[in-house]
Amino acid sequence: KGLFEKIKKIREDKTLNLEKGISKFKQEIPNIRISDENLNALTSYSRLYEIEEEVTALVKTWLTYGTTDISKERLFTEINKGVRLIVSAPTGKSEKLVENTDNFFFLEELPRTCDLYHTTLSSDTLREVAFELAQNLVVPNLKFDQKETLKATKEAIKGILPEMIKVSKGEKIVGEGEKVDKYASMKLAELTR
Image (cartoon, rainbow, N blue to C red):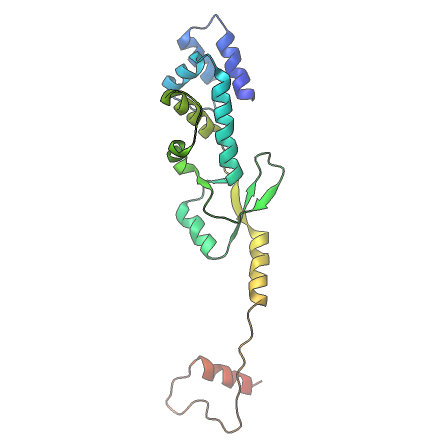
């Protein structure tokens, strides 16, 4: 909300022409990187609330499902190893375990999601403005959860049944010149206890 309040104030300043308005925006909101073309559209569009609603919807969607700056390759490698993920709620007050790893966003792929998103804005330029602003506002909220991963690992270990090895009296375990395999090694270890 603070961002759009600042934009409204800049727009309402009648002493600023377009060039000075763009300059003031960059000065007052330096952490938002937006092209001059989109900034021009933003400062001249009469129904700013529509862009604000669009930006809010995009950011909320991305943060609700989870957004990450972890590379795709590393993330899926860790998931395949059994690492658990958590996503922080958009409010930042709570976290939840990610159950479905198909429904989150990678920061580097956000530009491609714009085409998938249903919008109420009437022009491609306005959609691009909203999208570019939203990209500046979203922060990664998907991370590895060491506690849940450790818990899942312990549960998996509990589910592993011990392998029983039976050695009969007089049974040949390994012959002279034969390689000692896994089972022979386990039988020998059991006999030396």
